[in-house]
Image (cartoon, rainbow, N blue to C red; front, side, top):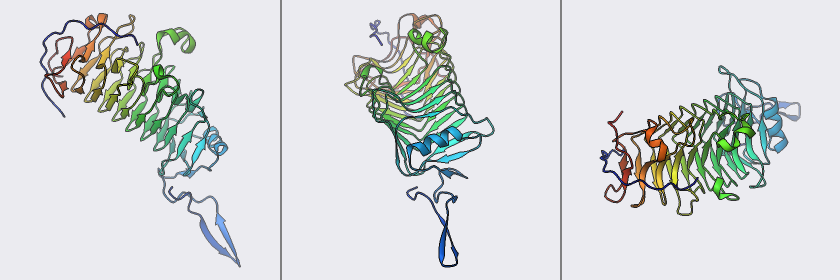
Length: 346
């Protein structure tokens, strides 16, 4: 994103508030002098009740994803699944489909320049829990996929974004996950978590209409050593939450903020944000459907002396964005809290 010129600093006052190791258990029975193995036995350490163990090959995993039915619980084997995998089936609100691991199983695409490690394509009501994705142009991609939960995941070593919610992917939760070392092939697009799509791509993904990837919740994640923003919220998206995350960018970052918000109606609260370069959070208004009515509250920042913790850029300053006075700075004598006056705490 382009660097914004800093407006003259205005004195503001913030209250300092810191707030299977075993693959499967085979049932063994005796029949005469022979030994019979029950190959339908459940895994010895279930990642969720009633889990069915997936075989150790890439084809086993893709077949399991293709044949999944509402209510299924699929457990990854203690292995590395090499390749890219696609989900096109859906669960339901009362019977989601679970893909999980109790052993930190890994999905590992062979390239960082093409493909997605795991692609949910028009796939709703999945729970992804407890495994790693290493590699891929993008680690996890959701297209037109809603009501999914991504929890306890580890995403790293990607060519571009770590996790991307796109093409009207709404009402998803990304929580308690660790994302790092993104942007290995294309640093400019190496965001940790990316929601929506840029207006320049709407005709490609959403029939020239805003990408309404709305009401997504990003919470309790740890994002660090990413090439671009830790979290990037695009224009057209709305009413999401960024909460209780630990977010940082290194000195080698290609962008000028840790969190960039171009959507509207988002709340960023109780995050710990550290910027080796640039601002903590920036809000931008790039069109009439962006950068308005966002609330930034109760976050803690560690930013360089020459930077704002929170910068409301340009036209976003008159778009109803709120910065509350309970945001805190680790060293309040070194850097400025915001370029707009703060409002009473909510």
